[in-house]
Amino acid sequence: MSVTAPQQLRERFTPVVVGGDIGAYSLARAFHEAYGIKTVVVSKLQGWHVSDSAIIENVSCPDPFSADALLPVLRELENTRPGKFLLLGSADATVKAIIGARQGLSERWLAPYVDMETFRAGTEKQNFTRLCQDLGVDHPATVVVDLGSDEPLPESVPFAFPVIAKPAEVSEWKRADFPGKQKVHTVASLPELRQLLTTIRGAGYRESIIVQDMIPGDDQNMRILTCYCDEKSRVRFASYGRTLLEEHSPGAIGNPAAIVTDVNPEVVAQAQKLVSALGWTGYANFDLKYDPRDGKTKFFELNPRLGRSNYYVTAGGNNPVTYYVRELIEGTLEDSDSLLQEQEVALYTVVPVALVKYYTTLPDAKRQLAAARKNVKNPLIYRGVEKSPKRWAYIALAMANYVKKFRRYYRPQPDAGEHGNA
Image 1: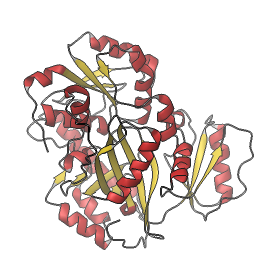
Image 2: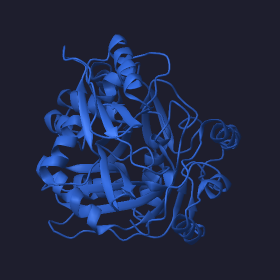
Image 3: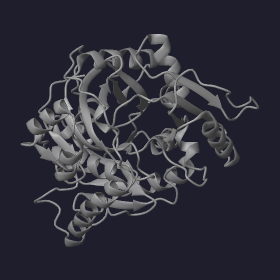
Image 4: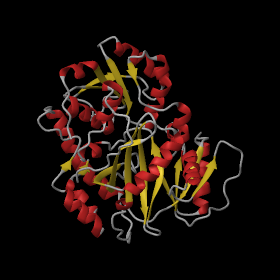
């Protein structure tokens, strides 16, 4: 549902997004659709997702992941226009930088994020796993390996190989470099796991590594949930989706590439337990996966922001940035226990629809895809607004490259099993 605001509201605030990826562009598009305004995007490099755009003003920052580097850039920006600034991050690391920088900003800046203690309690994966265990929230069996200690590497894990290994602290993971590094590693055996952990420690990463039971099934078993929590940590809005396809190139593995909107009150109820325990406010974005072995949808992690694929929420008919504006700018988000989770049936995709159709193999997933084909939304394709030939050329090239990337990197798991509306 697009919201039209009066001119006075458009003059009262400027959206500022730190980060230059497709998630930043999706946020800019959401603000433009709702209020007809441009977004300032602060990034180190002006990547093609945010360049040559009619809805974005680009500002350079030498290191948008550093609060010290970000602060002077934002202060200088403050001198260029009146009104408030709604400051958002498009990645966990930029949100962390914003939390660190905001104490040095004037009251004109509104950064709708929790404090650093709550940020770590919710986003550091070992803490999130412990919270799920304490609250009885469904999650994969997990072992936490602390590479910052002198403890010996594990001699076993209490679940079968292959297993998943991933960093608990994404910001520190970005600084580590070693051959074969991936966002998430699939590990076939105990010797391979011990060698990987040794390599990671040698690369300078001294935080925890999360080793998890590998839930069977391919991308079609992945789920996503985006919740807006008010100042009392009540979930006021929830957007659930079923991932049909993820990206599989090494640098982007795990990012949703195609999502069909859906509704799942049971999962939202579990999310409410988590955000209530944390005292969470603003957006919480959860990664989940349906486990065909026990029929449960299991929580993997909490992202402290609107996610990279946040435009799936807008595609479902509920523009997510309007909740920020209603609560922080207009003051019109009523004090209520009401919860909106209904949404239009839609397909969000950043890849050609033909690819989504090709890789959607489960019968129930095919039915959901067929129902959503009448409402297909790609955040990059903003007809009637984006008119730069160079930009459209980049989009066409990106679509062609996706075909090559999936042929090279994606080998779906067979025999994932049909599982209804989980």
